[in-house]
Image 1 (tube, rainbow, N blue to C red):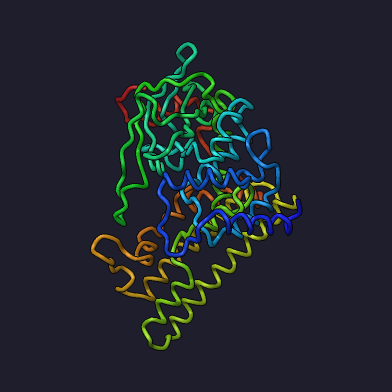
Image 2 (cartoon, helix red, strand yellow):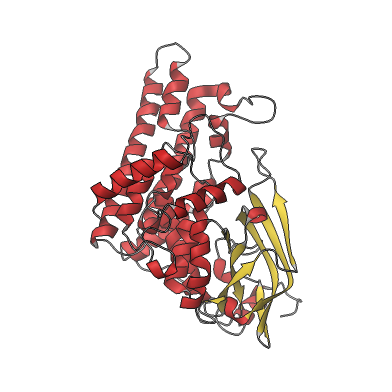
Length: 405
């Protein structure tokens, strides 16, 4: 089906089956799942994925058309990790049995997945993971902790990176597991944010969590490659390209340029030269980012681009969002950080409080610069002193004098 025919079909289905989002609250997790099931029943979930795993076998272009037309409608907003990051990573790395079991459920909203990568002592250095998986007959026993996991309290599965061999170098002794978050031994604790939200980020603790042998995703001790594919798709999701095309359009991540203009105009006083300059800067940053996103998306579609271009988009997002938040506060002054009803601040205040999120989440700006420099521009890699040293030996070297290995 060509894109024009598909667009007409989508318009008819949306108007008959979904509500316009204007004036409606953000869906709850339960509502997300109902909405996603309705989208799947209509044949619009997993559009670019193989039919044998619950998809439609269409193109990313078809998915982009669907979300363009669906932008005014109330859509599930809390399934981005499952649909835009986990699903394509499973397709790249998991066995046919794992794909057949999980992808159809992800597309229907029956399974919500999260990342279980970062740890209290291994954030940007994911290869330093200390969560361990020990083989016990036909089971794996998981012990350790993960942190900064979004929506863990309402998720079903975690994409869990764990160390399976301490005697290999740190990048070569890792494996990835499908972790049921309701399994015995899993404990989840909320982390309160500076903006007052206490229902988004969590820390998980694993105490002798038993997983079956087939919970392994990818090859044993090849978890670093699997995790890198997840990060690849995460950065594509941040930029709205690849399997994630269109998925980000349905949520408003921060204060927009239009919000800034409206806030300044509400004062009823002429703009100063400085204010005009700030608005122009916010606008030009948005235009450049949007054009970059279109160029990368087109390059992926046509095959003229390959590699981690999502890192460039992720870096652009991190810089753009942070700078826009600074501009918003300078333009609006004290009104930017006024709480509406004593409990919740407005969009500009939230944007400022969360200004560093896109600069850190999914890999810091510094990590994206490394990726862009090394893998897109071909610059020399940074020196690494422990690449060929066993992880056990690396831990021994890092231990303070007098402590055991």
